[in-house]
Every structure is written in structure tokens, then in C-alpha cells.
Amino acid sequence: MLKPLLLNTALLPLSLCPLFHSLLFTQFLRRAPTNLLPHTFSLISISLFSLDLTVPPIRASIDSILSSFISKIWFTIAYGRLYLLLLRSVVIKCTDVPCAGCVKMGAGGRTSVPPVNRKSETDNMKRVPFEKPPFSLSQVKKAIPPHCFQRSVLRSFSYVIYDLTIAFFLYYVATHYFLHLPRPLSFLAWPTYWAVQGCILTGVWVIAHECGHHAFSDYQWLDDTVGLVLHSALLVPYFSWKYSHRRHHSNTGSLERDEVFVPKKKTGMSWYSKYLNNPPGRVLTLAITLTLGWPMYLAFNVSGRPYERFACHYDPYGPIYSARERLQIYLSDAGVLAVSYGLFHLVMAKGLAWVVCVYGIPLLVVNGFLVLITYLQHTHPALPHYDSSEWDWLRGALATMDRDYGILNKVFHNITDTHVAHHLFSTMPHYHAMEATKAIKPILGEYYRSDETPFYKAMWREARECIYVEPDHSTQTKGVFWYNNKL
Figure 1: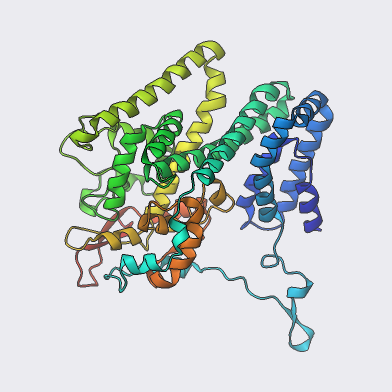
Figure 2 (figure 1 turned 45 degrees about the horizontal axis):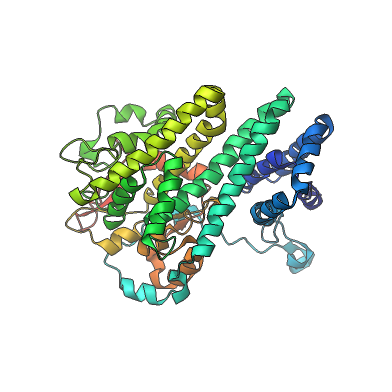
């Protein structure tokens, strides 16, 4: 009953793209009880057909747009891959719901279903080894096929075009057709736009992040040009963040020198921490972190490493940067100011509400995902942190966690589920990272960690369990710190 419903829903006309994109988020229900799925898809189907019946001008207009040659070409490039990806995600696989060929006959005529191979919660909580690994970085690199380190300008730009095409199409539909929707459908369409556009723009952010790592092409000037344009459009000071992020990669896992999400020791906890160590306090902390965390980090170095004086990503003379980097910090500031100036004129022309709905809220989604992704990659009860007596680069780079975001792994260009490989070889382009991750797993062994817990559950668990770090007094090693939550 469920398979035909999923297939019929997936084959609805693609011309109804705004609501079609809400199907992306059914991936979030993949671990929920299966009886929720039919109702979800039925609701989306009803909404789609309601739009088709009640607002025929919209259907006619979109059909007219897609009938032109150029629109068809762009539509095929941008949405062909997305549609195939969606089909692979929502059609139930044999490993989840067994078909007749998967069911084996047991003793006494009973049938048995092969168990799904998933990590247990105990496996996820098993600590990463903190001893110096028995392999070197060069040995890990030799396990990776050489082509994984090759950067293609054409392939890298194809992802830029792909993301920007989807973003522009969503913008076009939202600004041209949402105002004509009946009020109930408008309440559904705008949140769908905010969520999907925010996810797509997070993918754009990740590509700019690759430019900062010189993973976009073989030409540094091209990487910096593309990165400056894309990050400035998202109000990120490109060079400022590039240099501080480089120091994060150079000092990952160090309690003294890491740049972001540096955990506090128990002795450094604030007096009010114990009042926030409860469900309401965690909700408040997460809400502030996901909404204000990114701009507060850029402006005031919140959650960053302590400096001897005030640190700010917009200050060319701040302690984060060296004298030779100052000119590029000015250039980063100019990029953000130019986009801000354009937004100001857009507010004057279109109104504040228009800019907030079309640009502001999706940007808020981008900032939230950016903070969440970074937080979950470096915060986990199984991950160690080191002080100066124990830290070394390789162990610090291995103190990261690959996470599973479902279909969003692809939307985010796999920065979520290949982060261990990214920390080991940051100049590797994202489109080779999955292959590289599979290649290095046998070499890393227990030093490689991934957690398939749905990200929203993992976020809550880490907020509950990872309050501060302290040494494990049951071991002789005093320079290795682990998360704890007992205040």
C-alpha cells in the first residue's frame, strides 16, 4: 500500500516546484514510525492538486516558462539531479521494508527478516582511541586513489551553477506566484521556500568554504574570486573567515589553540551554567546558538579561543590576523559592505518585509545550519580534546565526527558525512570526498568515527551530555579531556 503511494506522489508534475520541494524534508521522517509517511505524502499530494485546481494561472504561467528552450535547459540541469536524488531517498528500499525475495523461511514455516545493519547507541558512544595512531598521514594518503586529489574547474563550476540555478528558480517562483496563492497555501508555501532556499544556500556557502581551502580549482586567484563573491553574498567576510578557519584546521582538538567551539573546562564554567543544565535551559541555549551564534562569532569571537585583547573578524588589526593579511581583511569588509548597501537599497525599493521574506529568513537558515554542522562535527561524548602536553596535529584532526543528515548530505555537498577526510586533506574537492572516506576507513580503523543518529536527536543529546571537558581520572594520561555534564 505504501510503495504505490510513494511512487505516485513522486511522479506528480514537476512544474509545481515550490510545493514539490517540500518532499525533500520527508527524509527527516525516515527513522520515524512508517505509519506517518502515508499521511505526510497524502497531505502534500492534496496541496499540490489544490494549487493546480484553484490557481490555474500559476500552472499556465509555469508551463509557459518551462516551454522556452533556455528554461528547459536550466530546469533539466538543476532539477534533474535533485529529482533523481529525491526518488532514491523516498522510495522504500529492501533494507527498510523487505520484499518477498528478502524474506527467508525459517523453522516451522516462520519467516525471518535480515536485520538492518545499523550502529547501536553503544557503538556511537565508544570513545575514539587517544593514543598516538599506528599509522602516519602519508600512509593514509597512499590508500586514497590519486584522482581524488584532482580539482576540475568545470566540475567545480557545475556545482556553483547547479546551486545558483535552483536558488534563482525558487526566488523567481516565490516572488512571482506566492502573492497569488490562497491564504492557506501561502502559509505552506513561504515556510517551504525558507527551508529549501536556506538549504540550497548552505550548499553555496560550502562551495565558498571549499574556495577558502583551495579545493575549488588549481588556481588560487580563481578560488579567492569565487569565494569572495559567494561568501560576500551571504554576508560572510571571506578572507577573514578563511584565515581563522585555516587556524582551526591547524589546531583542531587543542584546548589552547583551536579557533571555534572550544569546550570549557569545569573550572571555567560560568556561575549560571547550572541553571541552564535542564530541558528549558537547553532549548534557550540552542535557540540562541542557532540564530545568533554565527554573527556573534564573527563580530565578538563568541565560542572562539581567548585572545589577549578584543578579537573580531572585521578588524584588520585584530589579534586573529597578521600584518600581511590586513589588506585582504579590508577587502572582505568591502565585500560585506557592498552587499549590505545593495540590501539597503532593496529595502528602500521593495520594503523590509519583502527583503526579510526573500533573503533574510533563508540566510537565518544558512547561519543555523552552519553552526549546527560545525557543532556536531566537533562535539560528541566519544571525541577527545587535548592540552599542550598531549596534542598533535594528526590526533586532533581525527577528533572529528562524520554525521548523517539524510538527503541533506548531498545538498550540503557531503561536508557533513566526510568531515574526517576533509580535516585530513582539506584541499581535496568535495566530489571526491566520499570515495576517499571509503578508502581511508580500513586504515583508520577505530580512529574513524561516524554517528548516524538523526541530527536533530544528536543536537539535543550533545547539548545535554557535552557541557564541559575534564581529564579521565581513571587513566594515567592527564592531558586528554572528555566531555561531562555533571555540574
